[in-house]
Amino acid sequence: MASDVEELTINYEEDGVLVVKELDKEILSKGAWTTILFRYQDLDKRSNAYSADRYVIRRYQKKDGVYQSKSKFKISSPEQAEKIVNTLQKWLKP
Image 1 (cartoon, one colour):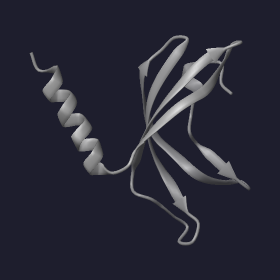
Image 2 (spheres, helix red, strand yellow):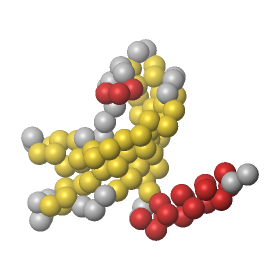
Image 3 (cartoon, one colour):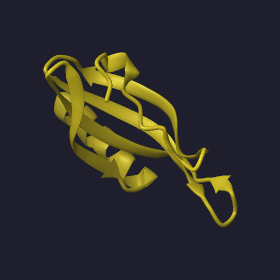
């Protein structure tokens, strides 16, 4: 695991093949508990093509100098992402 928040990634390889490809990340909070929003794609092993963009929010806890994954929430569709964005914008309006 990573000891610096900038090193955290969801890139994942199996047998030298990148099966989860991180496209971008936004660090939402830093500290002993860190929250990161990732944009990524999964590899479809049958077609050897990457999926449409997907999103996940992950929480990490820094313990003994390294970050450990503690929880995650996958945003299941672009429609769900839109609902989250719209709801937050509504709630945050003065």
